[in-house]
Amino acid sequence: MSRSRLFTRETRLRRRSDFEYVRACGRSQAGRYCVVQVAPPRVGGRRMAVVVSRRFSLRAVQRNRARRLLRESYRLLLPELSDCWMVLRPRAPIRRCTMPTVMREVRELGRRLGVVRPTAETGQTC
Image (cartoon, rainbow, N blue to C red; front, side):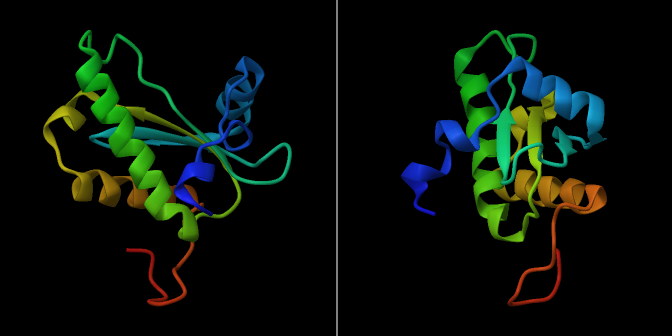
């Protein structure tokens, strides 16, 4: 899937009812840098959302950087992900970390939740 078509309206969680479904029917894991919530899809396919509120930071630059880090982690994990609806929420320490660190954590949290499958090349999840 091309990068421009990766985060279209159809591939994002947008409605309040979708977020309530993930919260009510899904599972979550919290790490140092983010919280990952997953639920089986109501309608087929993968969908995701990154939720960054003002409570995270009053500075838009910091909120946008956290959003970019989590969105890129999701994009890179896409070949390893099973079909699920996923909500990613950053935590305060993400402000001081790098992309590889965030990627490792999102992969590990996804593995714990059972949505990251082994890759075809390596046969491993990490």
